[in-house]
Length: 348
Image (cartoon, rainbow, N blue to C red):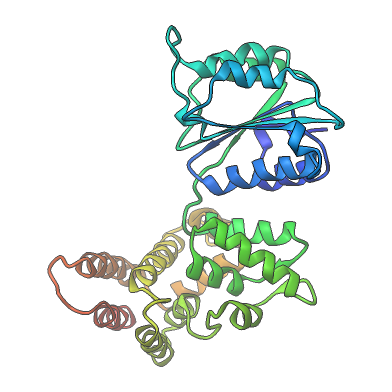
């Protein structure tokens, strides 16, 4: 059975398509182009062999597409294949034809009675498809699915995505390895998934470790923002400054703006843990907005090193450093500012 609209995720849809289960119509929409591009190509690769594509694959591009022609292609039966695949790329660029408010509305009538042997894929980037008649018809007939390809936010959302994708590849990944990838690659989803694909193949025991990442991606397992966060949580001044010195010698892979953003997120969570009325593990997790007991325990441990007043001051130091690093009120080198910030945090 196909995944339900309200629970659809990239991982679930990816798995469903690979198993050969297709909807008649896919609307892939949103701000993150990676998921849209990957899913539409996966549909083509799974539904059709190379030999079948000459007769059964129709590609249209939004700036030149005529919706009536697309619908006509959808109504044609496949030749020597189970499916015919019709793909509209860059649908947000479809020009309006004379006499129509929105050409995408024309898909509504097709959605009411799609040809079972046709898979129609509409790729709409840079936001949501603006056609209520079409989307209403999809919901009413259950002939298709709308997938929202949203941008991933830094922090907990990005870390959860890394863990979930690694698990979907049959691999486990520990907290430090997750943080290293999130810190080094960020929300470049295409690169992130590519690196995870590679790491999953190289992991002999299906476990993606910091050492494996260091050996194959070039991120230091000992000198990164995860380790800096850990050192500051323990007030380990020597280690904290060693890490910043390493960042300064390797500026390309360790911009200070990323360090400041990560530390702001960390100390904000520690402050929430410090002021939580419920100090149980469940209470700290709820206050800090994390599902990880390991992260919650780390926040709680840090509250023993920094009192509430210190944490409030640290948040102020971080905001000040962020402003000064952008050239407002200071012309200091970014790493000089970072060293000054670390000193202030350690002595807060």
